Length: 117
Length: 114
Image (cartoon, rainbow over all chains, first blue to last red; front, side):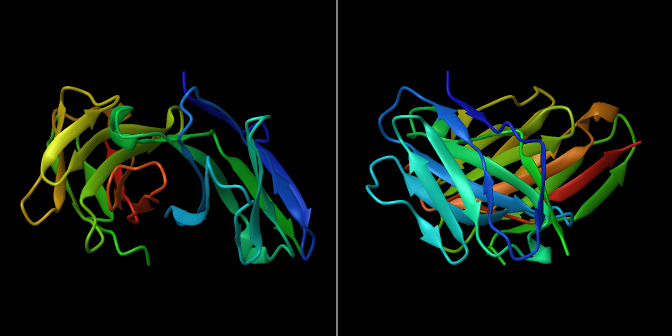
């Protein structure tokens, strides 16, 4: 069964330091997409970064990068130079082809990141 | 701003009542997904529509129903509400259904059932 696991319920990081949020996934389908979303205390879900299962290079978007290790089925999010505004809940999600429930997203339980000044 | 709009932002109602949540997808997106976020269940997929047709159902209760209209906006109807239905309801949209396509989320509707 498809599954996303985030093993860190909460993390602290000092402002301006880098932090890695862990995510492992399980799927038997060769075609899938991996996503990270940020949910601040206001509640909205903000898309951060995407990695496709066939992508050869790790995805990067500004201060966000995805450490994609396909053989280990991991897709860790790295945030460089943390800012106070990065304090939020972070969700890892996987999307499979449409024949698996219309291409829904499966979410992990989330990691709450707190950035200390 | 993701381009996905949801109304209302907040809804307070009583048990047994019926409510309708509305979603307008991003321009050009044909696929609409509804998710429920609660403290005990996390983020759960409810139902998906593609270009007006229901394509997939997840953990959606029989008391809940949805539809997507010709202009592609979607509505989620929740009836005979119970206390446990209190949650944050998200609508998300994507161009299609491929795994490479990002789903963009609306701001959510926060439902409180008293």
